[in-house]
Image (cartoon, rainbow, N blue to C red; front, side):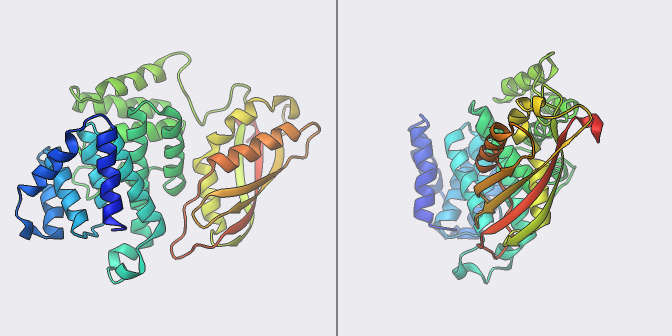
Length: 357
């Protein structure tokens, strides 16, 4: 793992700052009670066993001991985030998930290249998506709705259909989420972001049916109530004035990120333009979709560092500035393996009412 000392400080710092000052010492005591001869992989196995027994604090202690011993098991930081969140340690869970995302995006350091699982692009993309969905749940449960929605959009950029969660929900799946029922909460968040309101309600209800006494049941109930209300949240549906992103096609991409990955990011994060489109109805004639282009510079970590909107409409300057800001601050792209090169890209967008498709 990258920088075990820094990483352990992130987790324990999160526990201390999160208000439960006894949690970190308790975890250390739990780890110290076990034989030191267990070894890194032995600690991982012990953590998995304890997590399966719902001994989440003990599982966290084992995973932390594994990290301190240099374990490099795939998804270890995500599993640590899961058990910390199950214990209610949201700040520490957030730190764990962020470390997992960074590890998946950046890839293994040169000293660990000999471990084949560390340099598997598909596996790392799956781990990044799993960690993003976990982080979104932690942020949502901490009352940080905006950052949670942004994180879900980042997860959907890497996994547009939330396939990793759909697989995890299958009986006997090898994709592990702890506790298993939590997959339905995360599916609910993903389906909200995808505009699948009824499917989101079904996911949250499944969570409540299976875990009615969960510490997160009130949060799930709040989502159901909001989605079922007349003015319930419906991201990724047409905006208040009937406009949305109908299609996106990247016509030019030079650098490290290929056009298909950029198009996938647009599909998964189309809702980031909704607020701008709410103000754009006067620029678009009924029955005449607006075609525009976004030129972007994307750094090696998938962040848009510059954006220029080309809006062929009279008085369209305010829309262009709004779109540029939304893209710079909101659009996140999956990073291909083995590249840190920046990318210049031009994506053409079609804006209009859904009935104009």
